[in-house]
Length: 131
Image 1 (cartoon, rainbow, N blue to C red):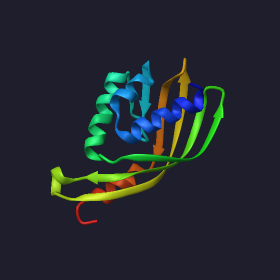
Image 2: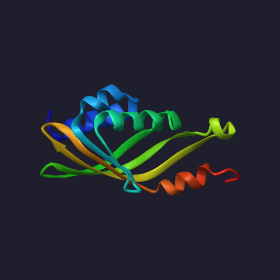
Image 3: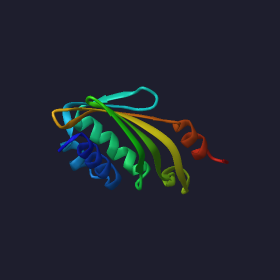
Image 4: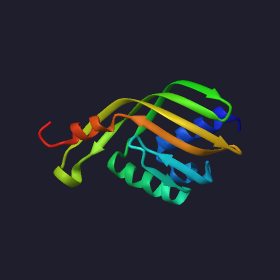
């Protein structure tokens, strides 16, 4: 697979919540970095975090509007959306859609780094009781 195909396959796996496919597309030293700069390493750890995230937002989906690649690094620009499942806390759900960007590095045909940039503060404010 070429660079774009690997990224497209990873996005498809995310949008389907397919942890097995996601794990197969990660390097053994894969790094996930969230908007706050928190870093997780390795497919097992990262997939466990994604599993928890998919519980909180089971229909999470990303849509890419623009992709810019230079060497083995790609910048993605688009939206992140889904329904925030607050049922555990207060039996409610909230629909979230916000602009997002991702920085993706590939090595040997697999995702080495998946870094997301988005305003999750918006999500937290939206999820707060009384908003």
